[in-house]
Length: 470
Image (cartoon, rainbow, N blue to C red; front, top):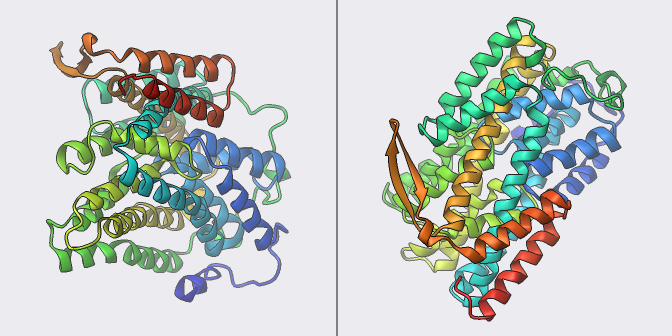
C-alpha cells in the first residue's frame, strides 16, 4: 500500500482487533455485498447501505448514519459512494475507506465499459435503438421515483418543502448556479439550527421511529474512534497524496497532448465537475449533458439518456454515466489511436478524475465532521441542503421528461425568465404511453426496478420490430 498504507494507522498507533469487534475481512465481504446490490441510483444505494449497516449488521447507529449522509450530501460528487468511503474509514481507518469506495465503483465501471463497447459497435442498429428507447421511459420513471424517496426522507415539514420548492424554481426558471443554491440553503439551515428550531433537526423535527438503532447500541458506539479524531499532520499528508493522485494525470495530458486534445478536455472538464457539482448524480447530469452535447460534441442529443439507462441497469453509482460520456468522446475523436483503445482510455480517465476527489473530501473532512455530531447549527445546515437537493432532482426529472417525451423544445421568455417549453406537435406518443405504464407499475403497484427496466426494454424492441419509429 506504500505511503497510503502507512497512513492507515497514522492517527491511531494501537494494534490488534478494533474495539468495535468488526474484522476487516468481514467488512470487505459486506462492502462487496453492498457493491453487488447497489442498483437504482443514490436513493436505492443509500437505502441498501442503511438496511445492511444499520438494520442487519447494527454496526452504525441511526443518528450517526444521517449525520454522515448529510455531510456527503454537502460534498460535490456521488454521495452514496462517499458514504461508503466514510463508513469504511470510520470502521477500519484509511484502508477501510479505500476498499469500501473502490469496491463500490469497480462493478459499475466494468459493466458500463462492456456496454459502451456494444453501444459503439451496434448503437446504430435499429433493434438496439429500440432497446434504449424503452430504457429511457423506465429511467424517467426511476428518476421521478428518486424524487419521491428522497423527499419522503428529507421533507418532513413545511419549511423543508419550501426550501425544496425554492431550489427548483431557482434552478429551473432562473438558472441560478447550483453552488449558490446550496450556499443559500445551508445558510438558512444554519440560522434555523442556531435558533434551536426542531424543524431543522435531523428528520425534520420528527424523532426516528421506535425501532431505530441508537448510536450507543451499535457496534461502533456513540464515541468517536481514536483514529477518527482530528489530526492536522495526518490530514495534510493524506490530502497531499490524493491531490497528487487526482491532478497528476490532468497535468500529464495537458503537457504531452495540449489543451485541444480530447483527453485533456475530458481530464479538465470532469476535474472541474468534481469540484463544483453538488448533490450527486441526479443533480449534475443535466449540466453534464448540456456541456457534452452542445459545447464539446462528445454525444448526440438523446445519447445521455442511453448512458443513463446503462448506469441504471448496472451496479454502482449513477454518476458512472460520465464514464460513457468520456468513452464516446474519445471513441469519436481517437487521433492516432484505435477508436476502441481511445474510448477505453477516455473511460478510465473520466472515472479516475471523477472518483479520486471523493476519497480526498472524506479523508480530509470527515474527522472534523465527526466531532461536530450533535451541533445543532451544522445539523440544520445539512438538513436544509438535503431538502434543496430534492428540488434539484425534480429539475433533472423535468429536464429528462422534456427531452424524452418531445421531439422539439422552444425557448419561451416571460415574466423575466427564459425556459424551454415543449412543442406539443412533436409529442412522442409511444414514449409517453410507455413512461406512464412504467410509472403506474412502479409508483402504484410497487414494481421493482430491474423487472421494470427489462419490460420497457422488451417493449421498445417490440415497437421497433413492429415498424414503429424510435
